[in-house]
Length: 72
Image (cartoon, rainbow, N blue to C red; front, side):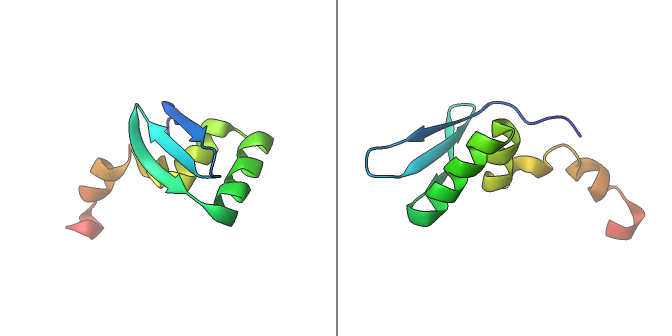
């Protein structure tokens, strides 16, 4: 699977974190979830962390799974 790219995040003054993917909003985190996200981004691969938190880490294999005999 290809490494995720195109993610960025913005921390706002009220503590809200907005995650964007290629310029479009992909998720908004508030409160304790925002704090956990920021701690995880600082300690690991930021692109991979943002992909996991937005649920966008699955892209790339849907077509193969759809064509699998088990899923017909």
